Image (cartoon, rainbow, N blue to C red; front, side):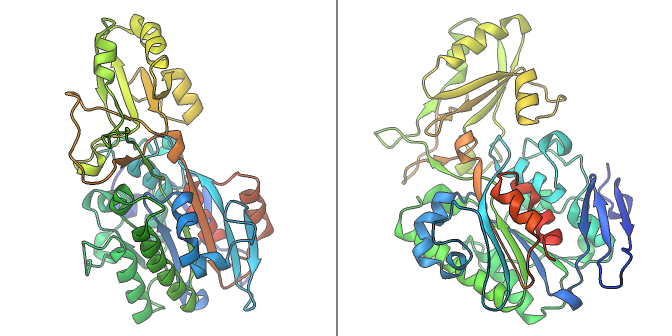
Length: 408
């Protein structure tokens, strides 16, 4: 694997037979049509990091553009609509990757694959699958990449030629909507310049604010205005999230934490534990997933039984089960995966947790796996893609599949 965009492993291009059809590429065994902005308008993929369905539900009264593409029955009913200008619209819930963390899900989105293929679990991991964005760049597309965080930027720029990629300097790094705001401004200034854009927001806001507070309604209202601007530019855009967010707090306002170390030490098990969520950010100090490597494999059944009986722990899985059930790579150096419930996180090695002036919110469990998905296009959308969404067969890493292939 190499970061050189001229050495992508699985990229093929083929011109379709008719003059009106678009050429396409094949990346990681998935086919993608190549967008041409001068013919169709910009294509924009957006990851609203940390956004759950509850965030959208709680702010929907302040989101007229999002509301316009969902049925009157509510957000959770997948629907395809056409407005009076004939724009194709699609909306519904989709599933992300578990562990429901930033890095594995963003790696899945940019490669169009599950974690078993790209093998990104920790922030320091490099994708082992090819990037859809890099393949599009290699085919001649101009790329706009906008994201606030260095670690995320390093991940989503996998295999891209940075010299040939527009990466705007954020106008206001303290504003978590700045990557989208700045990208919209660039698209407005020159709508024909960028064939495809990928915009990934930070989840710092969602770590701090609940879905029912006034700040959340204001934040998502501003987001909705930016989506309205994309609509005015005749953009095709698809929006999803890498993971949701939940409050992980006891009655006293402190994190509801489970100390795996003390639990296993109490039954005489020697082990090491790692936490996929940790990337140096304070808000990512505690999460709802942990991996355990046993010094003696014969201790596994005893450890599994003890962990499964622990209050607040949703499940503990042996390697054959978590690899098969969650599509995690067999190369993962762990014997047990533990996942907390909706309200629990796993404590650090010394049992401490950071001081917060707000209820502790985090992610990583199955409860943060389901995320929103929305698409709007100037053209009608294919029935096949509507049907897939309505049957629950869409994942957040199908973002570029929908963005590039769902239009008629």
